[in-house]
Length: 378
Ligand SMILES: O=C(O)C(=O)C[C@]1(C(=O)O)C=C[C@@H](O)C=C1
Image 1 (cartoon, rainbow, N blue to C red):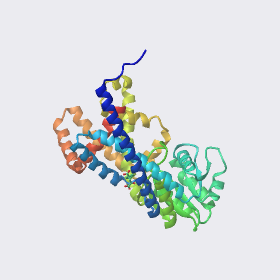
Image 2: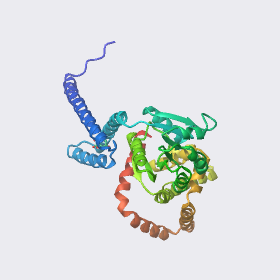
Image 3: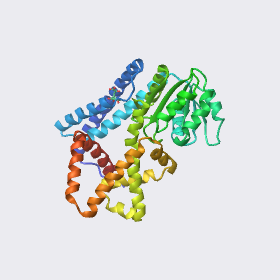
Image 4: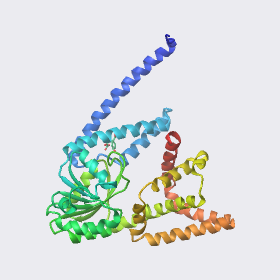
């Protein structure tokens, strides 16, 4: 059966479209050539491939330009999200071939972030020695024969493992951890590692998924040795991370908000759903994008290891104080709800809105992006 030939007007327009698309591809090739130039300059200057501010500002300009020409915002956003991702990947490839390579030993590399790091570093051409959960050589041996020794065991075991292995790290090498709290591990590393061993405390601010550190944040705390600090910073950045420098104390205070408060809230919501024996499947059929996002976060948490979240909630020294405030605020709203006290909800809402007002436009933009994405792809 022969397919009917398209209308001649359509054929003409398709020819025009094809010509425009060829121009677009030629422009993309030219853009990639410029990106390789950017990578060369960044390599020389030691700059990271990812620049959050530049992407944000450039995209805002392009969306505004698109509006003047009737190009919908989300078309510009989607196209440039893809183009920025391609440029970052190309830059990482180039930067990694030029990066300084050294041997890495990972203690606790069978699961979670340790396993993720091992995979990413190996893919990036690093020599990586791993051990964990009864697999591989002894931790002390891994510590003794690598240039960068990474402790990636669960939070509760971190300080003990550091104290055990740090004395075996060789002078000139660097000892590093990746735990969710920084004060106690950093102190342990500085105390237990011999004088000539450099120390850096780090915290990758994301779960172990994805291909590398593209657009992910990593907090770095100085321990001992500026050169080692710079090397670790460059290592993460060469895999696409955005690094943030902080003291261990500041990091821990921030994590009380970013991890303790938020995970505790998610945990409470999950516990409430369980107590109610809520029909989650049925609720999803009715769900607004906000409910779906929330339920996805709750489901994500409860599909992971209980011990990880128990550690996050109980190890941070700031946690009890924040948790207490959380309880008081929850009680305040619970009282208002129980008594039908609309006025008190409005009053507190307005106080919080005043406190948050500088973040309102940022919050709208971010949450719109999340919710739009969920509606389109979820
Ligand atoms: O301007 C830069 O620094 C670039 O690396 C280029 C570019 C881009 O594709 O426009 C790519 C990655 C950065 O995150 C920001 C922008």
